[in-house]
Length: 444
Image 1: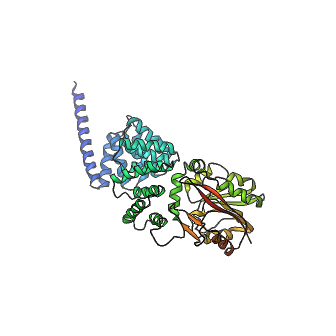
Image 2: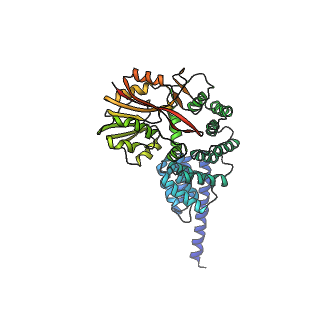
Image 3: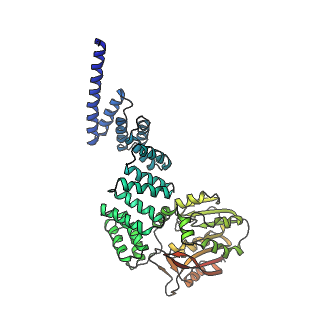
């Protein structure tokens, strides 16, 4: 071996030793929160070994800790492109993409990670979340099943699998998953709430109440838990409406399977029944508002009469489903109880199975009246409260039923003349038919 080669080897070994020393100091600085020092150290190492994936990943995490996600993303991206695959950098990049709502990009990365490390339970869980966000419920459920297989002590994965099973109306299976999540993490408020909802569907009301109270013990101001307790009759006051965030969460979670479960399993018929009732009063070239449009069920029936068809719903994922049908001229995420500031007035406002989440209908009918043209028409459905001693009542389903005399009073006080009304079975609930009232009224 020549003297020059020996000298170069000594230099290389010294450089490697120096880099390892700097890396150890940088890692310690990061653990102790000295982020500027850690960044400087990692960057120093990368001057001599720019493709060291472990160091690039560590530098990316420093940028995250410093609140610099753009720099973190650039660094993780560089590390993730290296061969052999740097799993940690790919994982961090995928999580960052999910945080930025780039779920499709995250899916590609998680698949790459799982090809290299198929027993990575957390990655299976995150992939399931990404599939759920992109409304692919079958794929999501499959991923959560893998997640609990490879990470059986991961409470979040069990809770997520319960939510996925709920979406397919597998209530008993969902309850088992929520119980497992709670065993692993006793103060897991999301799992307690979800289990309460499942137990309520199974008519196990006393135990459901216990889990809602566990939520309120940790989060005393949780509106959804308070509302569900009120639906059980354990709190004296009946609220005017379900919390908007609670309704949004319900329909965001079920958007992927909504039409299959509602139409095929629950025999949901309200859109067709309501259209049959209002169709004799329709004319062409109407401005029409679908209030609480959901996935757009029934919208194609109104399209031939619409000069402009607008859909609004509280659930962004329902709106996305409706948008994919290309039926509406305009779609918007909208809370019915917010101010109505539409750019035009409507000749028809129809609403299928929306008023069941509101007890007091007077504010909604007032907004409808204010937004209608002269002699404009409204058409809507409610669940039928046969006991006329109450105006409306909140039931353990978390839905309201209204008496016909209350609807008549609301219409009268908001300047409407009743055109027609009918009573019909509108869907099934727990195997039983649900009676509904459908109304068509005209603005005087």
